[in-house]
Image (tube, rainbow, N blue to C red; front, top):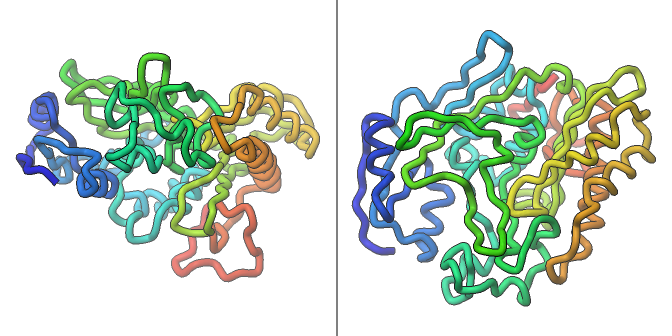
Length: 356
């Protein structure tokens, strides 16, 4: 780890001003940043501690029924907020399926949005990686890549975005608040993360000094009764998704009025499945309709190496998520949130979460 300056600003303006200097990074909980610093992937010249900035650690319900979540709200605090979990159960389920309880108690909402890929070649400084060193190449293309992208990838980068939280946020069209050199602005979460293109693998649209201050979710009572997040991982806990899916349905009897769908673990950003959403409108909620929607969602998928199986898995997980969503949001989350194989007879975890 290289030597760096450590700064603790007392205002947003001071934080943004400090962040515009080359080599600067923002530090909240550091659950991702500190690991990358220790292994030499990130070598900042200036670390700006934003953890004590005022007003960024609140969950605020707005008059129109929407909710604003400050960037410093802890993942566990958001997931266990009963009003939030009842309104946005798929988001709560996604949060509780990520990492360990200890990390969820530390990790922040803003940091979760900007998690960096867990690609082994990105984390190995001896490997070529366009994300870590633009123009160096991508060793993952012909390396160990069974967990890499099947949608939106290029020869520049085949890494995936690791966040569980971002998947239902993408389905719900969350808005991200950003403070920058030119003041405050908002953008849809779907526009925050970038897919690799022919010229590089830039991870987000944020400019130097840009600081995420919060996010906003519109009122979503139409979907709260039929919302699930499902995650398949190589071990049941403390692991990132091989593939995951958020499915939210608005029902009119046995027909689907509207749906919101997104996939995780398949691309460099949470993947909104708009074609699948359109395919479900007006359809009866049947296995056949869910299969057709999953086929539409993965119509552009292609292997990036030794990972063709991920396309099949993603198809099955989306069908599973739609099936569970149609059955209805559970009153209490299962003992293993987001697992595709929940045991209905297993006891709920201590401090069980009531979401309906």
